[in-house]
Structures are given as C-alpha cells and as structure tokens.
Length: 247
Image 1 (tube, rainbow, N blue to C red):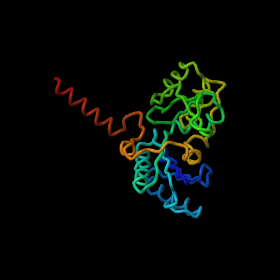
Image 2: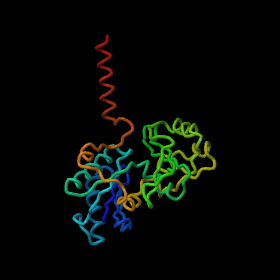
Image 3: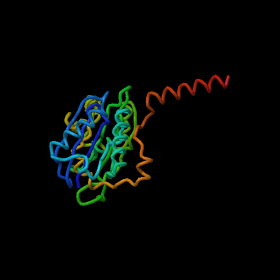
Image 4: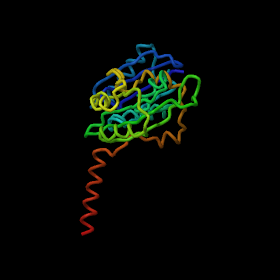
C-alpha cells in the first residue's frame, strides 16, 4: 500500500510517501500564500523521484489542524479531492501528530504547543495509553485536551494536571521556552526540526489508521479550536447589532 501524507497546517508545508510503513521520501515547501500550488508541485516531484504517479497512491493521510486556517482548509480540500478520485482517506490532528513520535519512544507525558499568533498557543498534553491500537501503533490518551489559550494560562493548566510532561514540542514550545523552563525545569524542549508535524511519521503509520467512510469524509472539517479572523469579525458585528436592537 502506498500512502501519501500531507500537511499544510504550518507556514512550512510538507508531503511524504511510504509503502506499507517504509518511508520513500519527503518534500517541504515554505510558501504559505500559495500552499495549493506548492502542494501539487511537491507531490508531483516527490512521486516522480520515486518513479510513481498519483495513480499509484492507495491512501491519503492529511493533517486537520489546528494551525493556519487557510492552510488547513487547502490541505483538507486537496485530500477530499483525491478521495473523490478513489483514494482512501485517513487523518489526524497536528497536536496529536507532534506528540506521537515522542510517545512511541517514551510513554511519559508529552506537551504539544503550536504558536497560534495573537498572543495564544494551541496546546494539549498526551501520554501513551495502556492499550495499543495495533502491534505497531501506540494509542494515546489526553491528559489535557486541546485548547487555544494565552501561553502562561495554558502552562498553568498543564501544571494543574499534576502530570508534569517530560517533553515539550512544537513552534509554541520553542517560542515560549523560557516560560516552560521556569515552570518545568526538568522537561526537555524538542529541537527545532521537530517543531512542525512530521509527515514522514504520518506516512509511516498511515496504513494503520482507520479509513473514513464516504459519509464521514463529507462531514470532515478542519480542527480550528478558535474562530477565524473573519468569524470573529462576524461575531463582533452580530454583537453590536444585538446591542443596538436592545436599546
């Protein structure tokens, strides 16, 4: 089975391919304003370098976010387009995917943090669950569910779980390393190379993930965790209108 993994949730997008869990290659692109164009080109080049075409791909694995609102929509729409052409579709969240490689190697709690801009981070804390989804894929349990919060409020929430993470990973962890070290001096902050979700890991495990049914694909939506800028403007306008009507 050939799996194509793609992620456009961050400023640096990436794609990877694998055959039955053996990774054949990865390509990254850093053009967030034109993710759709760069995504298509990167996939074409990556497949061609392995003497493959899109016809050889059996399954598409996509990252649903949170992250860039526009990027996540582009990635999901592209993946849904490939599923309409007959490809199986699987997916996972960016916070989940950041933690998975670390959880696989060490069952200790892992905190994932993505820089959400506007003074917030997307974050969650995971640990390896007692049961395994298969002999190769560890299941994860949430210690702190995914959320969008100011960094200090989020880190205080992590402290409140009483389960200190052994590692912090993601662009948010790199951006707020000083605050993390002040609260969790023994924790490891993952290197910059791990700061974006790994499509190579997603391609590696893609053949083990559950496949979405056609109905589930139609209902599949990005993971945002907070309203987009346009949605916030709409809500503010609605609130002002309601305030005027109430006078």
